[in-house]
Figure 1 (cartoon, rainbow, N blue to C red):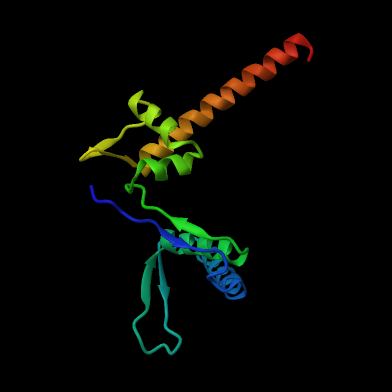
Figure 2: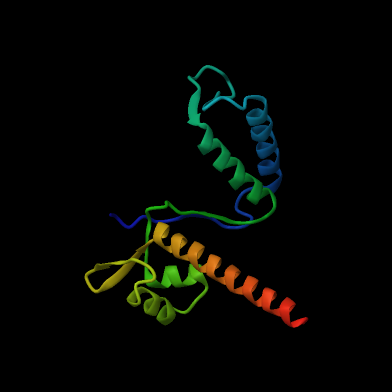
Length: 151
């Protein structure tokens, strides 16, 4: 597996007004043609062959443009991308040493590249889903206990 870089658009890089107009046009088009799996994008002059895009790619573009219209930045990361331990720790909002403890405890799969650990984005997201579910279950148990005790 190769190391795949994320594509990042910083806040304010895309003109918010132009992005807002574009996202409205895209959403209108997608709503008018809900069953089309391929979307044709014609050039302004109409002389060129239309660009044909998958519906999901157009939906992703609409999401990116909506974020840009609201003045937010966006990062697109392929699901198979491999992250360094620091990148993974930053995504989980934990320290790098804590993340390494999670890796060594078998909580998150990783592979070694030389002496460096690499974590796939998919595996990191799976850990995050499991951890969020554990946290919700613990919060539910505390709420239930509080109700039993009348707190």
